[in-house]
Length: 101
Image 1 (tube, helix red, strand yellow):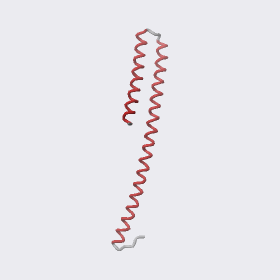
Image 2: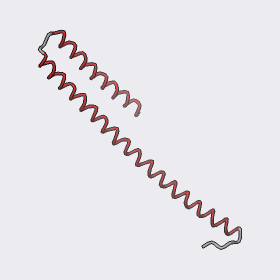
Image 3: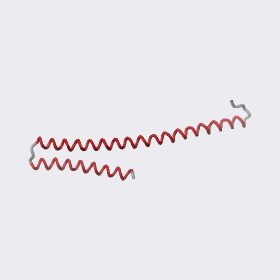
Image 4: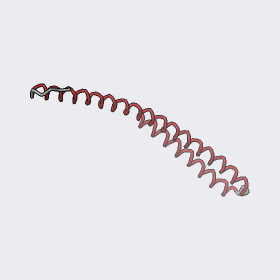
């Protein structure tokens, strides 16, 4: 599902960039004045940058959540390993006849 969303985002971005390039070329060919072309390209560029920023924010949030899950799993595993290690050390010393403090 994530791969599908990633492909959709890539398609959307490609579509927007293609539209901007197409618009720029059509303005040049149509002979609009340079100032009007600059204004339209700026607006289009801002829209693309806004969408890229939104996508980056979404990914940052998603990655942050995934990292938090992995951190919790790692903490549980470390705790389990500590308990297992302590138990095995006690058993070793008890079987060898040495006192464990």
